Length: 92
Image 1 (cartoon, helix red, strand yellow):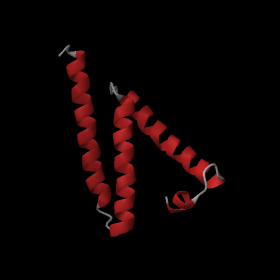
Image 2 (cartoon, one colour):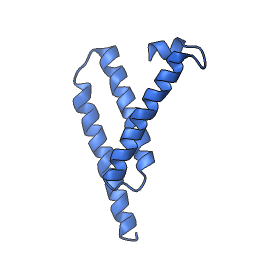
Image 3 (tube, helix red, strand yellow):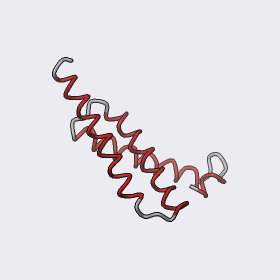
């Protein structure tokens, strides 16, 4: 994150960071689709934001409990996404 913040537009550092972020987002999207989430891309964006935030939390606060907190938040997001899917499937 630090390196990409200081990288020039179009630099190899920026390109590597962009490829990595695309890989993370694609992984979350694919997992959400496999789980049957209707808005897989929306959930992936939320999970990616949570993932980034947890990483910053650990780095800035040196608090390794971020993983546990992030996991609980991810479970809540996933449960909400599945509930939305069930309502859509039920025609509500």
